[in-house]
Length: 321
Image (cartoon, rainbow, N blue to C red; front, side, top):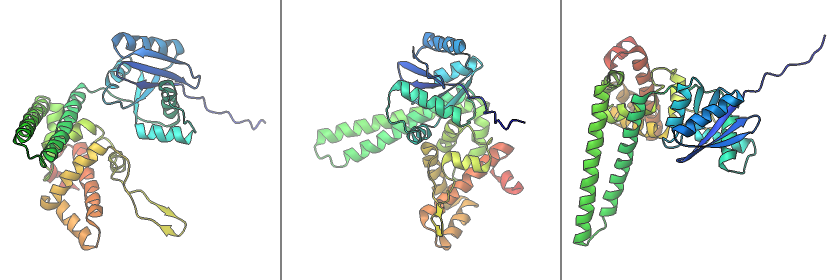
């Protein structure tokens, strides 16, 4: 009897390097590549190219929102469309010894990474995508407002002080308009308003945190507690080797979500009847402020995940947990 081992078939995946004006597509493992315009006719040509090669799976990196239309096109056509973490793709390229970088090479690396590691297919959600755009603009305006205030502090000339004041006032107006648009968008759609209301029932979680979690963490309420903590980057990873036991560290994940969760936890550590005692207990045990706050971030995130999964508000979740 033969001992020949039959290798599993190689997954054929198209990697797409997304830019503002074009899409570079590459097929793994064959290596064939093509460039398409970043517009509806170009998307149609991409679908035809994939059909000619008999490929039903494609992947790309997040590219500041430019990837949304092509992902929606792929999913609408019944193809498996996946969105990969850019940092993970870069690490994969370094591990594979791929140092050269062009759009075509990047597309092939994306395809190879997608063929090596499994990740869930993207499910287009226009409501969340629109909310994500507004949340991103709010974050950008907030950062610009902070910078404008810092830049205005050393000014001494009256004309410059007046100019800086007008700039700050304009940014405040823009920020209020975006926040009003976010509130109206969430209130107008039950698919967003219901989970937002559940999250806002938690002491410390405000409208900005709820909107950010809805827009940029769609897995909330669907993933396990371990998965959701890893996605956000609040899961502690071991750092042991031999007899050395290193400190557990949190790394990776979605930085905008983590920053927003940090501020919510900071407030919750002062007013939330569950988070506050947990934070104080950790501090009493000698844990540094950031370590205690990180543990509470994970605790708060896991609670929010359970609330959305069970569709119950904060008090109900506390009573059943």
